[in-house]
Amino acid sequence: MNAPDNERRLSPATRTRLRGGRLLDMDENLISKCTLYDLENGNVGIVVPDAEIEIPGTVYIQDDKDLFIVLAKIRWRMGPNLGIAYLEQPVSLGLREKTKTQSSG
Image (cartoon, rainbow, N blue to C red):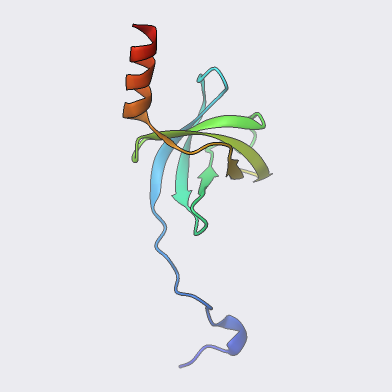
Protein backbone atom coordinates (compact mmCIF):
# COMPACT_ATOMS: atom_id res chain seq x y z
CA MET A 1 0.00 0.00 0.00
CA ASN A 2 1.35 3.44 -0.93
CA ALA A 3 1.77 6.17 1.67
CA PRO A 4 -0.12 9.43 1.14
CA ASP A 5 1.91 12.18 -0.57
CA ASN A 6 2.40 14.10 2.69
CA GLU A 7 3.92 11.02 4.39
CA ARG A 8 6.47 10.04 1.71
CA ARG A 9 10.13 10.60 2.40
CA LEU A 10 11.99 12.91 0.05
CA SER A 11 15.21 10.97 0.60
CA PRO A 12 15.97 7.54 2.03
CA ALA A 13 16.24 7.25 5.79
CA THR A 14 19.77 6.78 7.06
CA ARG A 15 20.77 4.40 9.82
CA THR A 16 21.61 6.14 13.09
CA ARG A 17 24.78 4.99 14.80
CA LEU A 18 24.59 5.32 18.60
CA ARG A 19 27.78 5.40 20.65
CA GLY A 20 29.09 6.48 24.01
CA GLY A 21 30.70 9.82 24.62
CA ARG A 22 31.56 12.42 27.21
CA LEU A 23 30.92 16.11 27.65
CA LEU A 24 33.94 17.92 29.05
CA ASP A 25 34.32 21.48 30.33
CA MET A 26 36.97 23.87 29.01
CA ASP A 27 39.55 22.38 31.42
CA GLU A 28 38.60 18.94 30.04
CA ASN A 29 36.96 17.81 33.29
CA LEU A 30 34.02 15.43 32.93
CA ILE A 31 30.60 17.09 32.97
CA SER A 32 28.59 14.02 31.99
CA LYS A 33 28.68 10.82 30.01
CA CYS A 34 26.32 10.97 27.02
CA THR A 35 25.04 9.14 23.97
CA LEU A 36 26.12 10.47 20.57
CA TYR A 37 24.37 9.91 17.27
CA ASP A 38 25.14 11.02 13.72
CA LEU A 39 23.11 13.67 11.95
CA GLU A 40 22.77 13.95 8.19
CA ASN A 41 24.63 17.28 8.11
CA GLY A 42 27.76 15.65 9.55
CA ASN A 43 27.24 16.99 13.06
CA VAL A 44 26.52 14.93 16.13
CA GLY A 45 23.36 14.83 18.21
CA ILE A 46 23.72 14.35 21.96
CA VAL A 47 21.52 12.85 24.67
CA VAL A 48 22.56 13.26 28.32
CA PRO A 49 21.24 10.88 31.00
CA ASP A 50 19.92 13.67 33.25
CA ALA A 51 17.72 16.41 31.76
CA GLU A 52 18.51 18.67 34.74
CA ILE A 53 22.33 18.57 34.54
CA GLU A 54 23.97 21.97 34.06
CA ILE A 55 25.94 22.20 30.83
CA PRO A 56 27.94 25.30 29.87
CA GLY A 57 27.48 26.95 26.48
CA THR A 58 30.83 25.70 25.14
CA VAL A 59 32.06 22.16 25.73
CA TYR A 60 34.42 19.53 24.43
CA ILE A 61 32.70 16.44 23.05
CA GLN A 62 34.69 13.23 23.28
CA ASP A 63 33.58 10.31 21.12
CA ASP A 64 34.58 7.07 22.85
CA LYS A 65 33.92 4.89 19.78
CA ASP A 66 35.46 6.95 16.97
CA LEU A 67 38.12 8.32 19.36
CA PHE A 68 37.90 12.02 18.57
CA ILE A 69 37.43 15.21 20.53
CA VAL A 70 35.94 18.47 19.29
CA LEU A 71 35.13 21.88 20.70
CA ALA A 72 31.45 22.70 20.27
CA LYS A 73 28.82 25.27 21.18
CA ILE A 74 25.45 24.20 22.54
CA ARG A 75 22.90 25.72 20.11
CA TRP A 76 19.72 24.40 21.70
CA ARG A 77 18.49 22.09 24.41
CA MET A 78 15.21 20.23 24.86
CA GLY A 79 15.41 18.26 28.10
CA PRO A 80 18.15 15.66 27.70
CA ASN A 81 18.66 16.38 23.97
CA LEU A 82 21.34 18.83 22.82
CA GLY A 83 21.94 20.43 19.45
CA ILE A 84 25.48 21.60 18.84
CA ALA A 85 27.65 23.41 16.34
CA TYR A 86 31.31 22.52 15.92
CA LEU A 87 33.71 25.37 16.66
CA GLU A 88 36.67 23.50 15.17
CA GLN A 89 37.38 20.31 13.25
CA PRO A 90 37.31 17.05 15.26
CA VAL A 91 40.77 15.84 16.29
CA SER A 92 41.81 12.21 16.76
CA LEU A 93 42.41 11.46 20.44
CA GLY A 94 45.59 9.54 19.50
CA LEU A 95 46.96 12.47 17.49
CA ARG A 96 46.00 14.92 20.23
CA GLU A 97 47.79 12.90 22.94
CA LYS A 98 50.88 12.63 20.71
CA THR A 99 50.88 16.42 20.21
CA LYS A 100 50.49 17.03 23.96
CA THR A 101 53.39 14.67 24.75
CA GLN A 102 55.66 16.34 22.19
CA SER A 103 54.87 19.86 23.42
CA SER A 104 55.55 18.97 27.07
CA GLY A 105 58.79 17.06 26.37
